[in-house]
Each structure stands twice: as structure tokens, then as C-alpha cells.
Image (cartoon, rainbow, N blue to C red):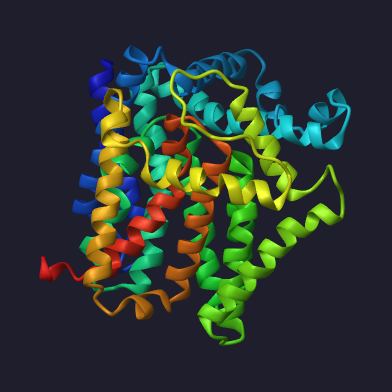
Length: 412
């Protein structure tokens, strides 16, 4: 069967599958909304694969696709090995320390969770990247759908606004439509935040199954996000559980977190949290790249973090400047920043309920603090503009939701 026909058939099948699942939620996506939003992801996913194949020699997205073909062959020849790959013991046996074993096992898990589901789907797709992209986007669509469900509970009158913020911001939909780990991060982050919201607002203890699954997935695909999520979720829980003042709670939780971060220097001169961040930066600085922003070397002390802070903010919040953008992707990143600050401007001059009242919701304030801490961490550790754009997508998505839901759009 021709790949184009397969793409259409798979698209129609997955649309009705998504609609069937959403019928259980009365305020979930309609069949029309699913058809449009999932259709946009599918189209952008096809474009994404074409761009990276022809302009960037495949990059990671085609690496994972090719891995699915290898895994498909393994499934045919040795199905037992196909499934026993998930056994963690070999990874720990081959490494000298538990930490190294854990690091390499997580790397293997990321590859397998991306390639093995597509290896099974290859029975239908015949190993075609573009057909596999339709299947992959069906999976990651759920993460955005869960975020939509979460914020619709708090902003029931902002349905159209949420649809745009979560599904249709160009840079976000582009990076979340290609076959790579970024889509899975949103899948697990959406799962985690939705069920944490349900649990903290009096939901069943069984919600913890989904919360832990979300934590596990985020750990596999970008473990550092877990460290940044902990203070945000802790502050969120304290605010609801003890009915405490939200801004005071946030100040105390993040103040204590900063104290623990730099206080770990007193525990060990080598194994401490600032050293972890500095080592991660040095790993990125050691990589080759055609374009990189200036980023001074970090050292495990308070003064170094203060010194590099302006560069961190500049690289993630302001760059690439329009006059330094090179190529399609950097131009897109520059336009995205202009859109972001335009939204910030509208948000500041005309917040529908007032800035303070908008942030008094835990579902707004604490995801915002998580997003801002993610931006800072990325700015401290990554000098490459392409990687910066991709890595900050989880934070950018949450910030877009917060800004879009706060602006009084009728005024404009």
C-alpha cells in the first residue's frame, strides 16, 4: 500500500480512537477539535522529518526511526531478546559504579521507548518514517490533551485560548511533532501534572500510580526536570494542604531550595549540586557545534553562579537576536521570542483578573516557577541555540498557557 494512503488511513483511525477516549470526559476535545489539532501535528511531523533528512542529514529523529527498523528485525529474529532488553542488570554489571550503570540504563531506556513501539508499528508502516510519524504523534498528543484537561478545569471559559496555547503555537507544535524524546517528555509531564492536580484537590490515592508513572517517564527522558519539579510540586501541595498563603509559601520553598542547593557545598567539595550543574555545562562545552552562544565556564561556588547569571538569562530569554539569526530554525526561534515578549506586554498591561489574582492559583504560579527555573538551568548549562530551543519547550509550553489564559483577549 502506498505510504500516502497509509498515512490517511492511520490518521482517520487515530482520530476516532482519540475521540472514543475523550467521550468519557464531558469537557474534553470534540471530534472536530481532534481532527484539526491532531491533523496539524501530523502535517508538521511530516514536514519535520523532511527538513531534518534533507537539511540536517537526519539528526536524532531519523536515528530513532532507523533504530526502530533494527528493533523490528530483532523482534522477528529474537522476540525474547526484544523484550528482555528492558532488564537493567546487564547495564549495572558492565559499569564500575551504580551511578554509571544508572546513567547508561536510562540512555538505553530512552532509545528503547522511542524505537520499540515503532518497531511493532513497522508491521503496518513497512518501516516508513512518515507513516511512523503519524503513530508517534498519536502517542504524544495525549500529553497535550492532558494539559488541556488540567487547565480547562481552572479556566472553563478559556477553551479556545487553551487550544491555541497548548496545540497551535508554531515553535511548540514543530518541536513536539518530530520523532524524538521531547514529545515523550510532554506526554509524561502532562500525565504527572493532571493527576497531581486531581490528587492534591482531594482525588483518590490511586492517582499516585499515574503520578509515579509521570515521574518515571520524565526521569528517563530528562532526569534533571525531576529536580526542578520537586520544589514546584512541594509548594503546590503545601498551599492546598495547609491553606497557606501562596506567595509566602513559594518564597519559603524556593528560598529553602536555593539554600539546600548551595548548602550542599558544605557537605562535599566534589559531590554537590553546584558541581553537578557545572559538570553538565562542561560536558556541553566539550561538544562540537557550528553555532554557540558565549557562556563562561561555571565553577562549583556561589560567586560563579552569580557571575554567569546574566549570560544564562540572556541566552534563554533574549537570544538569538533577530540580527544574529542564521537559517530557518534560528529565525523561527527569534520570532518565537518576539511573540513571547509581545504576550508578556499584553499580559502586563491588561491581565483579565489582575496579575496577582492570576498567579494566586497554584496551577498557575508553581508551573510558572518550574518553567523559569528550567530556563535558568538551560542558560547555565547549554551554549548551543538549537539545543536551547528544544530543551526549554516544556517550560515554554507552560508559560504560553499562563500568558494566554491571563490576557483579556476581548480588548484586542
